[in-house]
Length: 247
Ligand code: NAP
Image 1 (tube, helix red, strand yellow):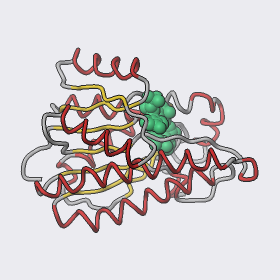
Image 2 (cartoon, helix red, strand yellow):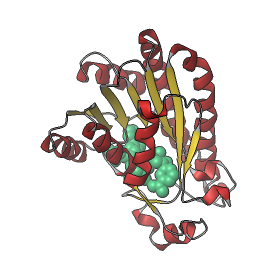
Image 3 (spheres, helix red, strand yellow):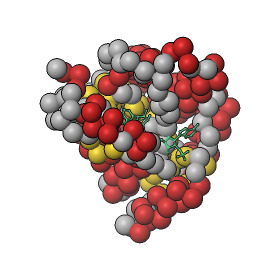
Image 4 (cartoon, helix red, strand yellow):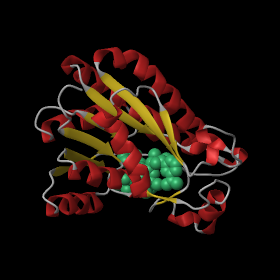
């Protein structure tokens, strides 16, 4: 980018990794549109950012199809004062379970939120970034998009799709100045994984770090890929997983 980014839309910013990312981006002086479904938690994130003299606005959005994604993109542009420089696709759901017990409803919900919504957010915002010749998009995938994990077939497949989209979008939008990358977290303590209890620690012991990550540790990598410190990085999926997929 020639000019530093000044605005960002972070989906899933009402919780966990997305919230940590929104707070960190705001601490860099970036005006953040905090998107999520839960208005109470969304306003809390905005209040936290403003209390630290940052700029943020809440955007209530249930992201699951082209219409909801494109509406959210348009509203985010207005809230941010006319443009979005950074898009972070952190909204996601991860219902685990055996393939034979997965309903079509759950299958569709996982792909609708994890893939379709991200797809149409990029479809709406990346061309606007390309018109300005600058922008950054960071998708959040997962370590289980990189290897087969019992009980995570559907979730892993949805994030593997997002991983390939990351590379494809890098090819499509990179030449127009828009960098598209992804972060692949390992087990991370968030509200969303709280129900996993000890299973999260058990997953984490399989990697060199031997412990779950924190939302801030994942956000550190997201912010790196979203800002100019990573200006020569396109189409990368950065594992932030305590080394799990390396061993
Ligand atoms: P989380 O605490 O459960 O937060 C998920 C966020 O996604 C919430 O802000 C939620 O909004 C939002 N969201 C879910 N469905 C949505 C929908 N239909 N429309 C709009 N927003 C929706 O999850 P997390 O642990 O921070 O995970 C964040 C991302 O990292 C996800 O994509 C996840 O797959 C990925 N990831 C997480 C881990 C981990 O161990 N935590 C590991 C690898 C990858 P509301 O709360 O407002 O409903």
